[in-house]
Every structure is written in structure tokens, then in C-alpha cells.
Length: 498
Image (tube, rainbow, N blue to C red; front, top):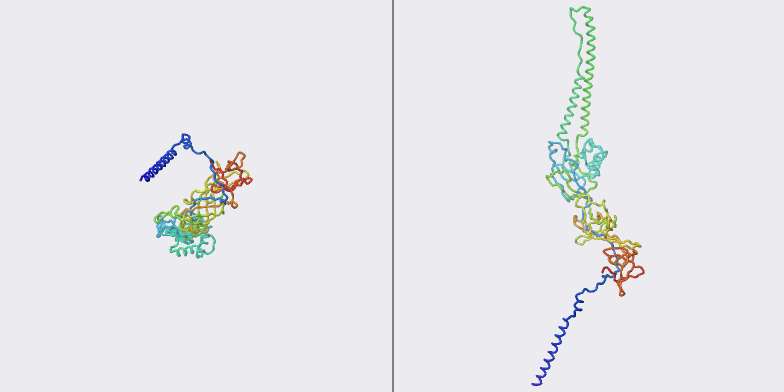
């Protein structure tokens, strides 16, 4: 029992010593001298910020956001009234113009198709570069008539000679064309029919007057003799009467001649007026019933009228059926681009299509509102490879022109872009590439010394040293460098800040 008690005492003593030692160690770690406390509060000594030199391929690009659109947007409007414009017509001619069948957005319009209807009359599409600006009918002549005749022939309605003169053959072809579309070609209005009747009546009246004048007989003679007249008196009166009768006969003939000439002139004038009017009387194509398009088919992209509206002013927008991408890039990027450059287009879903720069600047400016692409969101530039070694960045020099540059991109094979008109797409244009893998450093590493040479600062064990370089291609914040004398290699640390 005494032996066990001694062992317990020894164990307790050892445990006490251990606890005391541990407590002392812990307390020692929490105690700092004033110098140590001040050092802990001070920031570590500043050193340069460095980045490793990399060897890689560089590809310089211009990146922007664009809008998928249909090509060649143009405003659509009518050149004049639909119908003759005369009042009181049975088909509503002269009534207030109202859309009775509105155009349909998205419709594909071919030559000869009905675009819309106004007051129950059709508006028809034809191919031609001369815009419709007047009614085409008998008596009209010019390039627009020749254009109409060619269109009728293409549609299978032979107008006769392509002469540019609107004659009976053209009128007959127009009548057949309208009939094939379920409409009646525009015939003379009641007012025109009434005017024709009045001119015809004028001719008849002038003819009647002339016939009356030429059919009348001239009467005249001497005064009868009496028994009381003496021979001498008789002789005197006979001579006097003969003289008077001759004078009166001459005056009558002169008056009759003037009357006949006047009647003939009136008839000639009436015939001329009737003939002139008849040359313009007949089947017409009113100014508002045809629209000539330089190229067909077209697509009705936007429609700004509905049934019941007046068709005055712009009624919509037409486009080509092919897709393009419209965008705008900063002026500094625009200077790097030219027609024919290849373009990569990426949809929001990551699908890709290929395009080509087809127009820049004013040539690419959309002709209608809503066609502008979005402002460029990316930037890239190409460094000047010169003895001076100055690096160029994506920022234009102070005072340099920086107006945004519109850009149009043709898309021969839309692929995933089909059916996405109005959607946004990412535009990437490659403007340059390095010759294989090259040494690259961040643009921030390039410095220009007092002698005008481009340099980088390299940190090594011995300290920081300047290395002269020649600057090459710049892309994505990196720039190609070629060191003088091979004093720079992959993996070296270059200073980009302090």
C-alpha cells in the first residue's frame, strides 16, 4: 500500500510540472515587445507587380454586337389615288381613300401580286426601276410605259410592240391582267364619259350648223313694174335697181362666206377636241394601283396601316429576302476594317455562322429607322511595327476622329441565323494574326524611355533591368515583343505596376 501511494504522488508531481510549463509557453506567445507590435502594424515593403512573359499565338479582332435584319430596307408608299379619283363612281372612285385589305407583314411579294386593296381596288406589284408617278393610260408615252409593257409581257399578257406608247394593245393586256386577279381594269369614270358625250355633241352641233349654211339658197330680184311708169322712168329705175341689187348680192355673198368659214372652223375645233380627248380615253392604270420595285421578290417587313386607315404617306417597309447583320464600331476600329473581310457571327445560344463585310460607313447606314446595330462592346488594334517601337492601343489619340462607323455584313448561308430577324448576334472580325507563337507581354508592361525606344522592365534575382524591345501585333490586352539581343525569354517576370 505504501508503494502504490508513492507512485501516485510522483505522477501527480509530473502532471503539475507539465501544466505549469504549458501555461508558461502559452503566456509567452501572447507577450510582444513594443518593437514587435509596431512592426506588426506596418504594411510590408512594397515591391513591383510582375507578370510572366508568355509565348503564344496572337489574333487581333474587332468585336461588336450586331442586329440580324433583312437586306435593303426601303419605305413603301403609293404614288397617287387608287381609282380614277372622280366622284360618284359605282365602284367607289372619288370616295375617301380607305384600306379595304391591309398588307400582311412577312409576306413575300412576287411580280404581279396584289399588295393590298384600297376602296376595293387592287395595288399591284411590278418590277422596274422607274417609280410610278402618274396614271398610265391611252396617250401616255415614256420609259414608265415601256416598263409597264415589258412587265405585262413577262406576266404573259402580250401588249404588242414594246414602244413606250400606251395604245390599244397595252390597254387590252392591262384588262386581261386585272381580270386574272379577279378585278376589273379601271374604265372611264362617269365624269369622263359625260365629257366625252359633250365633246361628241359639240361635233354634231357644228356639223348641223355647217350643213344648214351650205344647204341654204340666196334669194333676190328687181321690184315689179307698174302701168303708170313712163319709159324713161322705167329705164332710170331699172338702172338704179340693178345697181342696188348687185351691191346687196355682193354683201350677202361675203356674209355667207364668213358664216361658212366660221361654221367650218367650229367643226374643225370640235373634231380636234374630241380627237385629243379620245386619245386619252380608255382603260388606265391609276397612279396608286401599281408599285414598281427595282428587284423582286421583296418581303413586307413592316406594315404601318390597317384596314380602314387612309393609305396616305408611308404604308410600310419592304426588304430583300436575304439576311444581313447591321452593327456599329468605334472609329478607331473602323479604320482597321475593309470590304471583303471575313466575319464570324455567334448567336446567343453559341451557334456560329460566317459572313463578309459588304459595306462600311455611309454605304452601310441603314435607310430606315430601327436598322442600327448596337455599339461595339469589344476592342482590338494592331500595333505599329516600326523602329520607334511605339505601341498602339485601342484608344484613339487625343483629338483624332472617333465617329462611330456603321457596318453591314452579308450572310450568304444564314444557317442558325435563319428565322432570327431582329435578334442580336456577336460579331467577330479577324484583322491580323502573329506569325506562329511569339513572345507576348501585357500592354501595361511597355514603356517608352527618353530616347524614344520601347522597353520592358525585367525582374531578376539581381534586381530590375530595362530590356529594349520592338513592338508587333496587339490583341486582347497583349502585345507581341521582340527583344534586342535575346535578353527576354518565356517565363521572365516583367513589371506591369508598382
